[in-house]
Length: 82
Image (cartoon, rainbow, N blue to C red; front, side, top):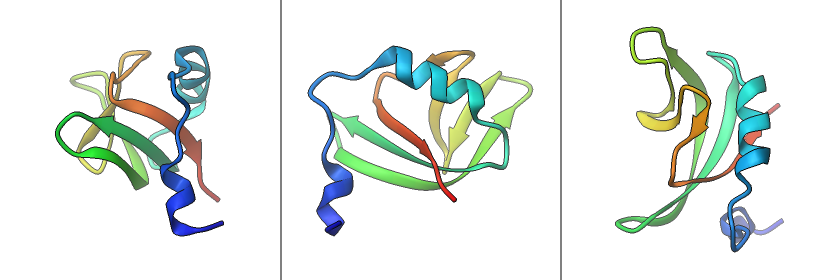
């Protein structure tokens, strides 16, 4: 797989699939998330998920992935890493 293959995303985001994946993510788990932002374009962040007890949010490298059980609007793909 070429380095640019990770930036290939579906035309529409699959909220159900994102929600199902989010339900399995635990704090400290290594994950990879693809975001599409009007400001920064398409980018991939990889690292450990962090769950906040105070805000009930899941973050990755300071970026919101989910608030409660709703995926962030800029989140397009989410996958666990080995």
